[in-house]
Length: 328
Image (cartoon, rainbow, N blue to C red; front, side):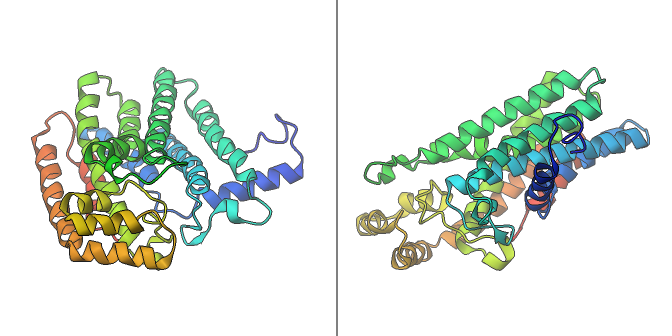
């Protein structure tokens, strides 16, 4: 952000604001997406029989920060759209008294930081256009996934649980989560490692999208059953009328009376409504169904990784081991 004053003629007030905003929203997370870029790049370099150079280390770190800035851009905007209260254990940025809806513009600034970093560290590289194109494409995919999520229910009409289907859920998980959280870090590491075979990218994308849905289902489970002090936020999927994996499973299993209970209580904000839905989840045994799903998916992903010959296994196992049995 050293260009704010000399290039953009911004005074101390703006410079201080941007620095504080970035510190508040970019740092503090697990940084798994950014670290994954470096891990993937290192694995490819080692697989080629080379040592990780200082230039490669710096460029990998820069790309990792690009992913973290993109993540912050999405989260600041998402918290506003979802009326969220907490993020990473702190009040959401827009909840601060001196911020409020300025946070919308701040999310745009965070996105612009991605392209400033790319230009600075990769502008002279022949693969620079490929990096820029990937970020644009993944941003668009994620925004479309967010739109599918936000429009799962009409905002001005009666709640219609028939709209909560597994097909729609899978599409939301793929576009809202899998592309930017899993495919993007790996694809970036592949690009800077000199991989340019479209078929290899397609194979990676297939596995990483499955992994991304696995991650999103975990997220939905933790929204309901995770400890707020551990996950860093208060889950509100029930109150927010979200097309959650849990409600999709409940609708598949519910008898007529149980479905009526869901229709009466899901998407309502009173504590009694939330308790009624969670009690039904327990009656339907959704914890056990989730645990079985988690084990089955973990085994399936491992099989896909083992069968893949063109990409070192460690590229995928780094991410898989980070998310398996996670509690936040």
